[in-house]
Amino acid sequence: MTATTPSPAPTYPDLADLIGTAATFQVLHPASRRVPPPPRFTFGPMTSAIPRHFYSQMGLHAAGVFEATGLTVEGTHLLRHGEKLHRAGALNIHARDIDLALSSRPAVSRRRHLAGRHVLLAGPGVQVYGHWLAEYLPRLGLLAAAGHNIHTLSYLLPANLPGFAREWLRLLGIGKRQIVPYDAGTEQVSVESLLLPTTLHNGVRGSPVWRAAADVLADLMTTRHGDDAAAQPARIYLSRRGAHSARNLVNRAAIEAQAAQAGYVVLEPEAMPLAEQWRLFRGARVIIGEYGSALHGSLFTPSGTIIGALRADAVQPGFIQSAMGEGLGHPTGYLFGRVLMQDPGNALRYDYEIDQADFHSCLRTALAG
Image (spheres, rainbow, N blue to C red):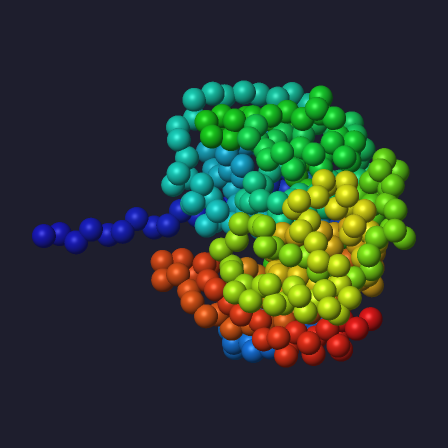
C-alpha cells in the first residue's frame, strides 16, 4: 500500500499585503510590541498557565482603517480578492476562523455587486453581545476618529443580525437606510470600495485610540439620550444569574449577597433596555461581576472607573477586559476561583467557585474606592 502524503494546510495572505495595490491603510496609532501591563490587583488561586498566556500577548497591531477595492465578502468574515481568501489579524480574522467558516459554509447561490463605499461591520463573534461592546461598536468610534461621518456611511451587515446590534445602531443614530443586509449563509457580495476599521485589542492589550473611539460613542449617546450619571449608583455588581453561560459560578447567590451587604447594587443588565444600561454604566465608578459580556459595558464608563472581574482559574474566556482597561483608563483586576468540574468534551464548560474570604478581601481593599 502506498502511503498518502497529506495535503499541506492552506495559507492565507494577510489583508495588509494588498496595501499599495488594492488597499490603503489610514494609521491612527502604530503597531507596538511590549509586555502587557499587569492586572491592577489579583485575588484567589491562579494556575501558572494564566500568567504564561497573559504576558505572552505582546504584539498589538496598528489601529486604523483599511479601504480596499475589489474585495468580495462571504459569510461574516471571508474576504476574497481574486481567487485568494485573506486573513486579517488587525480585524481579528485568523486562519482558524477561515478554516472553521469554510468547513460549515454552504455553496454560494447568489452574487451581488455594490457600487460606492461601504463599511463591513461583521466578523467572528458578530452574533455575540460582548463582541459588539468590545469590537464592533468601538469600530464605529474609530471610523469617526479617522474623520468619517458615521451617519452618512452605508454598512454591510448580515441579515440575521441580532436585535441588540440593530438597537445599538439605532441608538447611535444609524438609520435603517444606511444598513445594507446580505445573506451571510449563501450570498457573495463584491464591493467597489470597502472600509474595514480594525479592532482595538489583541486579546490582552488595548490601543490608546480606544478612549477616543469610546468618547465619540459617549458624545453621541449623551446628545441623543442623556446620561443622567449623577442619578446612577456608583457601585454596581453585575449578576449573570439570568444569562445563559457555559461558565457556572456555583456559589453565585452567596457572592451576590456579600456584594449587596458591602453596599453594591446588584443588577441584571440583560433585563434592562440598552439606553438604561448606557446611563447605568455612565454613572458607575466601581463595577464588579462575573467575567462576560455584561462586564464589557465598561466601554461606556469614564476613565478611572475600577473594574473587578470574577472568573475561574482557566485561560478561557481570555482577558479582553484587561485590554479594555488599558485602552479606556480603567484600573482592572481579577478574583480567581477554582474550577470544580469541567465538561470532558468541552473545555469551555465548567463549574467554579469563588472563595468568600478572598471576595471579602477584594471588596475591602482593591475595590474600596
